[in-house]
Image (cartoon, rainbow, N blue to C red; front, side, top):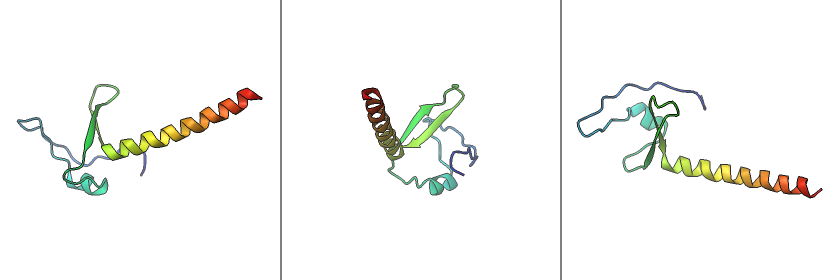
Length: 80
């Protein structure tokens, strides 16, 4: 189901602005007490995205290595 949206549950925002992540989501995404999450505004301002901080670091590292490969390919192509 990678890449698909999945509905877990709804949540109510508490007095301090807190929400509880549904247990199924925490288990499936391996989110534990003390884990850092990053909260982003969705592109169309209609909601929020919550991502584990370590997953963002992995994505950045992967993107960086891909960009490095593309850069090297472009340099080789340009030198011919």
